[in-house]
Length: 177
Image (cartoon, rainbow, N blue to C red; front, side, top):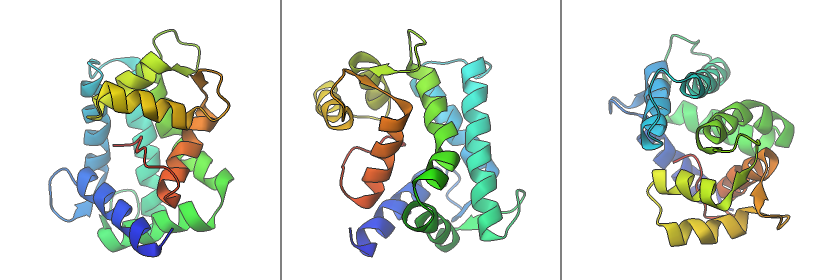
């Protein structure tokens, strides 16, 4: 993957998460992203799984802010966000990536895992991706791409791998919206 493609994907993510459009990411933007995702799943803001997702996004913001040197009450510029995120994705390795993004992905899993088995089946995955604006046909194709072991269920590891592969440009399935 070229740096240009990675930067473009991260710039798009920055723009989507900058809810107030002020050119900076603050904790409130991450809270709004969690609320936006929960609403797409039809979940009440007070539901336990929504709080779990909000906490996960808060943890992600805390990590990014700390690495950017702005502190948890600060804000990140686009340049800081891209620098810190590129370092996480491309330099720190899989274990660090999973530690930082795992709670967010697990929080989203908690919203769509109807049978509470910790795995995402094709119908649950379709609900996830249609909540992000994808068609059911596109979601079915994406499921086949992400289900790397072919068992008809997506584990947290498969989902985290898919998020990483998206950033490396080896997969065009964007799971974080």
